[in-house]
Length: 403
Image (tube, rainbow, N blue to C red; front, side, top):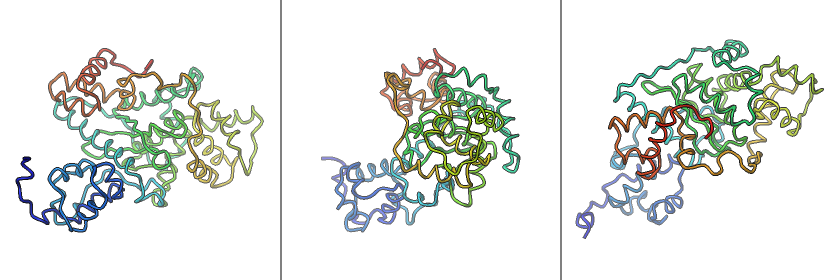
């Protein structure tokens, strides 16, 4: 007989208010919990109405699903959680209705960066952060030019890129070289595009949606948008590039910065003259925007922002376009042989967690600061795969090229 069955549990030994709070904070409906925990919807509702009580194993399952400690369920009232992420960067309609998948991956981002910070501290590893301080009142053109020069980006480098993946790799490695951890996770493109954090004592980190509506070009824009948040010390925002009124100036600056650093206005002006589109229009077709963005290997966001900023499109053009695009399915096509197909799990995981994270995990494992089981859990691999992964990482210590 199981130990649990031998224990006579009090009828109301958990707080039903906490059970309800923990579920709703993760945007879960009772029927969704049923599919995840294998417990009936009726039973979930009974627990939250104090008509019956869950067992110890039930609480452990719920704690895993709700991403909270089991001890929460015994508190007298919901705890005040210090939330490093602020949702002002999302339009108001999304607040409170984000999907369970989005909450899980945002928490994964926080948990991973918490863990990396603790590893650096425990191992007493040097970690240099080299991020300028920028005021959002500064002219965005000057800020973008300064950052382009610091990163060594030129139009000639862009001309050498064959695919948009190469553009993302360039900017990712440039930002990672400043002491920033860049993580790419699967998020709903219609909900969240990215996030950042730099709350003391944690390392600066950027989250980019791996399933972006525009593939690598969209990820590049998100990466630079979030980099702007680190520059302006407005990190901690979860973004969809539109945001709420109280974050409008911050989001607008980040959008303008990302567009300007990728395609300087002077260069864009010359280009429009060359292709015969140097004129103001009330409407710009998506096909035209796509033609332009493909030439620059950037996202639709970049082109729409520049057209509005340079008065080639009416005020509110980017806002309206972004809202229209968000309602559609991803519009990029996955071509035969496209990046990601035929890749090993190790390569895919490296692209998700980034080179700095992989290197740190390898060092920590070699120094005995992390067990085989913890390594496998963080990497989401079997133990044998995780061990092979760190060996492979140590044998290939630089960059993302060729993977």
